[in-house]
Length: 241
View 1 (spheres, rainbow, N blue to C red):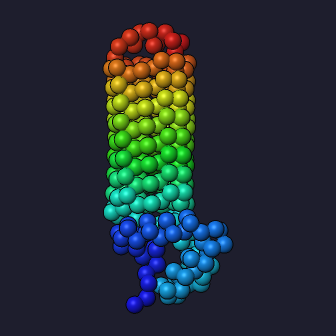
View 2: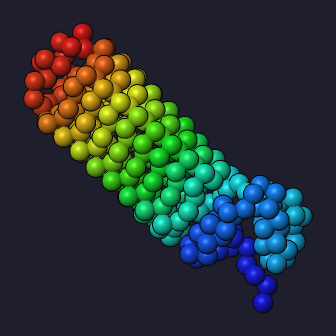
View 3: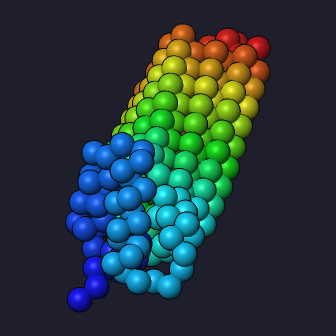
């Protein structure tokens, strides 16, 4: 029986075989990687040219995996630009260093996922579950987190300039040293969130819950605190003036 291609395994939800293939590829030099991929292509006999198949396997750009079961999948450093992952189950997935720019992950389950140093520019993550996810050093500039659950997630040093986090649940999230300049956090739950040393200049924190929120050393220049509730709000408003 002909060996199935890695993309077939991915679409079929056979994450173990996909991850095994990724581990095999990582051990090869660049020239050897192409030969390994070409071997998969030849075995699968999918009718396309080797160059076309290699491009498909090397990049997952625009792939449609909506509502797929991808828990613990290895997408480390993969090219997932404009991919459709709406409602996908990506718990504990490895998306570190991946390019997810303009991908659609709305309503996806990314709890405990590793998105450290991922490119999330323009990525749609509305209503996604990112609880306890690792987004250290990620670049979600202009990303859409409307209504997302980021409770307990780590966004330290993340580049969130201009990101939309309105109505998001950010309980106990770590934004230490993150760049949130011009970000929209209106209506978000920031209970016990950590913003130590973060840049919140020009951010919108109107109607937020700031109970127990740590803003020590944060840049609060021009922050909108209208209707925010929590401890020492008046003092923070003075700092933002």
